[in-house]
Length: 127
Image 1 (spheres, rainbow, N blue to C red):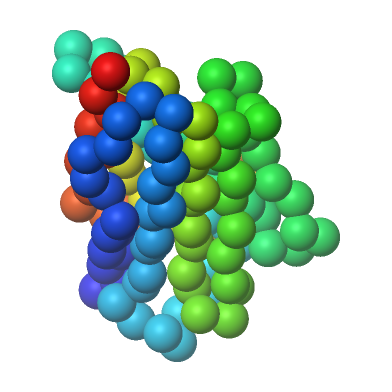
Image 2: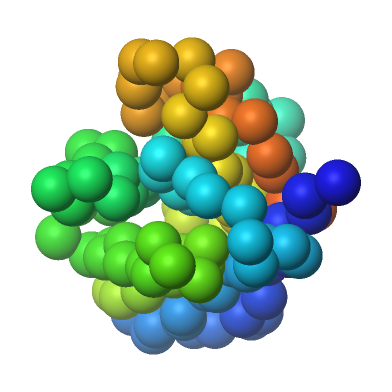
């Protein structure tokens, strides 16, 4: 069973930076793409960023463009999220996700596109 594990969350002041990491429990399986979602208290889980290994291509939510950068290593099934200029509204639990590629299509913003999810890591931005 494939499991994803996030790390790097914590408490940071507004304007600061954090780097999130995500790694798969199994090193031999392959993925088509990986991404990050977040969920704040009382709100729905929302798309943050994703990376498709072929090309490669990256995708970002409008709310984080210019501040967050996604990167990763296809061979290692790992993904990172560099978060700069953090705002209080970035406070949320951040989840890592992986798409197996079995669907034959890719809608990067859709939660049901992804086959595997991590347990989440808390990011708190204080003012």
